[in-house]
Length: 283
Image 1 (tube, one colour):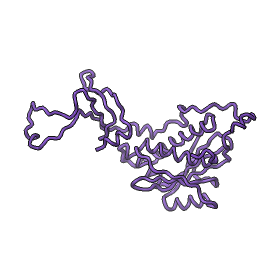
Image 2 (image 1 turned 180 degrees about the vertical axis):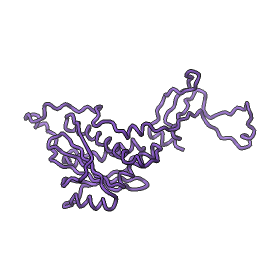
Image 3 (image 1 turned 90 degrees about the vertical axis):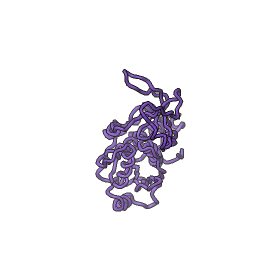
Image 4 (image 1 turned 120 degrees about the vertical axis):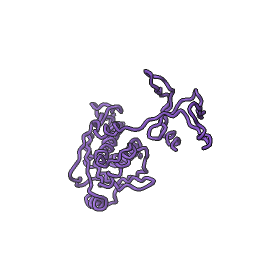
């Protein structure tokens, strides 16, 4: 991210980067994202009409920032774009019900904008409590960009990002020395939420996934399998002192030791697998 970018450009590029992080967290895969400023002379309304005709009606969201110049950050997503993004998140959670696509897209939006609010708080060195809502109409004008997300198996239709108002750069050290730096603003707290929890996120968290524990495995010739009888012993490839694997949706997510809880077997977690380790463990 360029440190000398204009405030509007900073908003667009920062949100693009944060959108990638949110998609990776929710769907397990980060697309290649590109944020491109509209060509000189391009009109927002004309561009939105062209994208809407090709990829479906555009849904607009306006996010207001309590910063100098009262900037508003607008995101316009054609139907094919938000539906495809939602499908990837729902698919990663094992949900095939596309009736939840709209709420899932709004969850992606709110999480990315929440992160943008925290990032803006760090840049402007103040607490940034934002508000946002859907808009029935597009902004009439503003500095706008297109954001494209490319996956190995396809490209998501472009999103439109627009910054309205008159956003101003954060005060410099010279401004602070001259007494123009805001004095009542507190530093942003990274742990404080910028937006309320979404019902969609709670819905995804309630999705039930199969969890199993693997004590080990072994390959046997068919002739040995046919010899198995009651009392036969199969030697596994795992030592008795090794940790067992906790498997969720056919993916190893953790390792732990076997314990007994009130007469039932359980697993005490010792290790949580990293994302790279989970990918390497996939069959």
